[in-house]
Image (cartoon, protein in one colour):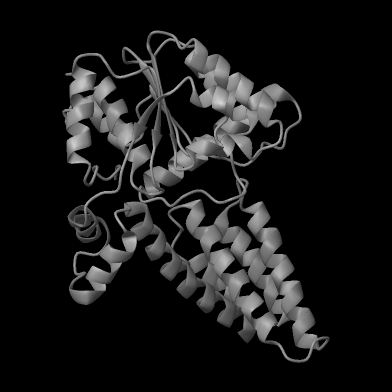
Length: 351
Ligand SMILES: [Zn+2]
């Protein structure tokens, strides 16, 4: 499996292909535009074009480097995404931990290339930027150049020690080596520090046509989608393929959550069995989506509860706490199946 192709953006890719071919693609740039329109996907396409054997130019799609980029295994393509803050206190251990968390995130993307936007609690800890700084200083592994893509770059500001992280990033952006191309992407560019933004060549990426969204649904999600249901999905996506993916995730997570809560309430030990039989979540995000849907459903029940102080209310509150603790643990490198089985036992005890 690999990244799905770019859907839509035909005119933009034409333009980018030409600027790559004449060597005019900027060394440091910022792709902005609405959430989910494919900014990171286009950035990876640019990376593919830069690393292509026939390149630079529009990627041929079939040479070995092009195929490696599609499979996210090219050693000179460094895709940075928001991660949890490392737990180690020693800075060099933190960098190692950040590297592991990124590797896990990339393994998730390889297993499930259709990703949604990252959870609210993760971002760019200083260790991730130090890691970027370190790799940016190395010689390219196999290609002539190194390409960095930093998705959701505005997440730099939500972390503690963000000033330090921002300064470290500035250092990389100010004097990138000649063989280095860095693309930041953000749907909230205004949240980026002006000192960082001013270094970057901006490129606006707009929504895709409804026809591209429709093609995406048919090819990547549901070949049988048709009629008014399909039209509704296309319309509510509003030119954002990320929106289509998120809507699909939400529906799946709700169904999973309802099934798990029902099993926990039966209280006969079925939860753990169900947890282990669960198809492995292709991505960590899908697991946390399910936990969120469970918490949401319990919160609805609390709101509807009429007699505060009764045993059921207390048990529901306890259950919520357990789910939230699992949610927090899921930010790290826990095994989702195992975490869910443990949670199930705790919920069954409360049932
Ligand atoms: Zn190629």
